[in-house]
Image (tube, rainbow, N blue to C red):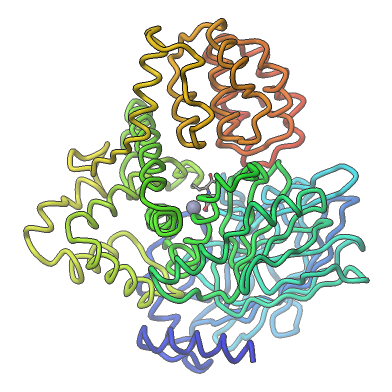
Length: 620
Ligand code: BES
Ligand code: ZN
């Protein structure tokens, strides 16, 4: 029944985009996609020659030597004159390769920075199936093996790290379905971006299916001693036993978020939406792995105040997972749309006052980051990026997210919400399970929404998408509550308001964050002590508030916070927190302290965090 439903969903989608989903037509539909696909400089794959269509992954996960041993068998679709299929690999040991059951002479090409090596497998137009037996490296970039009494493994594949644990065509424009058969240590549960178990198996064996085609960056695996709790008919949470009660409460509104999202932009395409709480070393806030968002435990605040992150990852189920950026240069099509959608979910569920506070905070973050990037590399403030020969990670700035958001908000304000919502809903439906690049989006937008000279002039697409900085027509956001905080802060700084007069207890997290993150850099340690005494911030359960407090403590040389700073940095590996904290230490002449803490913390961090911190702290 489940399969039938999935089939039906896919059939409808393909009918809408004008081609059939039957296997006989897969080459035709692939060819249509190929024509539309832009060159992806971050992958060796040559989709015109041959593409993968389905993966059967048989793997065993070994914590002792930190190696995944696997056989990846792909169904492929090769063009009539195909001579080879190229897959991306980084640090994989390839042991044997077969094509339609026969051993073949494969080769690994020279290694290039970031993108690794091409695995070339000889095929012909008639080849149907390739099989690769391989092992991952203990240092594989996607994987973090967490030590301790409760071992835990998780992957982070986006942007181009899937190739460090599976040989694959690691380009967001190439989609495939998958099934997986995975052996893990008894006493742990394995979870993937696929159909998932809700209980541990007795023998450590788990089977998975993902029947909707996904790009490789959405391949995900986690292994640990986790439990499941249902929070709604289509929603649930997984967490380690110590966090399961707190997680069940914190994410108890997930079903409402899902319903709000569907009411905005159409039916949820992935059947279930669950969330896995990862160890604190997870380098991101969240990752939109289909059917199973991976999330940092630092959003468990005890009061559901940080759930906008869940709204964000859920929104990716449409923007990103359904309509996927063609290359990492088009990353704003994933993230900008997702921030816009996230804001709309937040508004629908929690009201406009809350969503406008969030937008006001994003605006401030965006203005600061635009200033910073304009000083070093103004081209990186364009929505459409140029990441050739660079790490696609460089594109993960507030530009894709918040400049993208304000661009879409400008369109909404120009054409009216009703017209924009209708446009977006159709956009997601018509392009479901396909890729989108910036130029094609512009054409689609002009044909379907910005079809008058007035609208085009009001928006100025070129300035937003191909121009630097923040255009002058950027929408204005206003939040009275945030303005009130700013007024309180100014009065406190000038001495006309004393600490005990500040309404900290009545402030929600957004207001507390605004106050702390806008304290003057020169705030004295004495003044910090006053706040600390009054508000006991070092023991707050809200990690965003704690983070803002710790950063200001560094800038104010407020040493009583330093013990908390160190324990925070050793435990938490979320890059969004690490970068500003280590940078603040460097900028205030406290680099020795930074290096001391980093030497203890580094073994706990994921490669995407150590990559950034090594550079920041000039560590080899
Ligand atoms: N897809 C991103 C995370 C990502 C982007 C990982 C690029 C690797 C490369 C995810 O949806 C995301 O944006 N996470 C944010 C949270 C969000 C609320 C802005 C994060 O982790 O900070
Ligand atoms: Zn995102």
